Image (cartoon, rainbow, N blue to C red; front, side, top):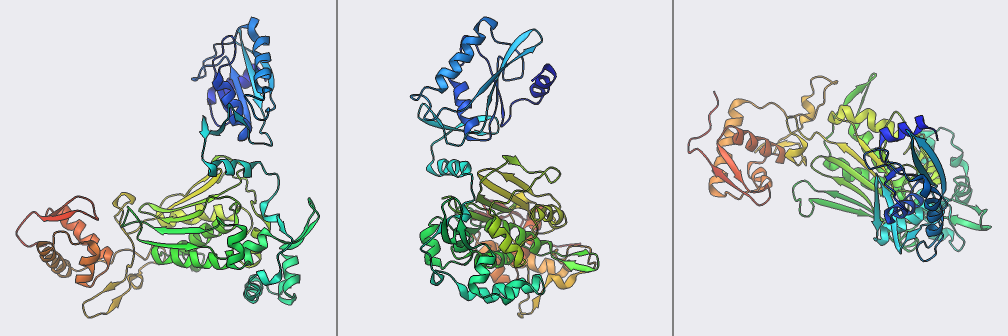
Length: 506
């Protein structure tokens, strides 16, 4: 490394693979913590003689050899490091001062220093004590795909072959004349790489990908006991949840169950794409759910999560990370975490080519919510897609979406989707109400609040035979007009009427 390259490094500062350390007579203990964390993550360089802010202080030239020897001696001491990480040192001249660069490549084993495991997160060396996090680190060190693990004693009777007619139908719809349509069950399993030989061990049989895609529930629970997808709606009851679905079945049925559950709670909007009307919501759900099914690490104890919260949709799943940090659409280089499972999903039309999921999230999140998604990769892959629940509200409002269908007292259903005026505009927007209807509703709400100051949004909606969102919207307008105020939280607070007069609109 020359002076110009070091100048660039100093300008960028510390990050996941760069650390600056002051160094006197010998390296301090925190230098070896960084050696440990770099080995356990993606590798990196430690610059001895540089302050945290990038100022070059330099190391003593007379001590340079002793510093390098100390590094080797400490790292090679089995009482300090359980496994000796590999390092290389380099001396760099910079503005008349000497900097020692210590390069630490990522190692094949999880390393501890003084019986403590360190991992690199952003620009911090973090102590790892959780068994789940330690398991994730071991998974990251594996140089093979866990989905290819062969279970030689599995039999056809351990699988849901009754799902294969549906698989063949989906494959034929995706690709007319698909060869799976003419194959028997075992031929299809071999063609999909779900039955074969592990050339590392010589074992032949069904693999983990086959278990996750088509295994019976009891087989899945024994081979991958931590596997589950936890789907939670938490918008009203923030202490617990509004609704919940725990899925532990095969990936084919799990994909459908999670997608259908999510559609019940997320507002739908439409947009024109060419001469076709498409639903950004359905596409976003498809990509988020498919990612949870395809790109997770099934041997990890970390469960997958699909969370519908006040600000939008969050997903989390264990990952075998190649990259750490936020993903950008301009520089993203997709890597398949489970190529056999991904290929199977592509064949039946539940996924497209590698990388299309991220592109679709960026393409459809903006028209759906007005904002871009946020994707973070690491030992846990996290995705966030904002949701605009009702026109004029924000994520901070925490407005539960639930049912946007209006019911009048006579029981007639009015669907806001029928109010579409322009196919280029979102259609699940609040329907404009007449002045008389609004005043009548406000008067009835005031009467309800007088009788029961602790009434909930849901109770008020049931009493008026309207939707939850209509009540929320009306009460908010009454608060802004100074008719009422809310004391305490939405769930446990009470209402107070500020004016005895009935609301009137000019």
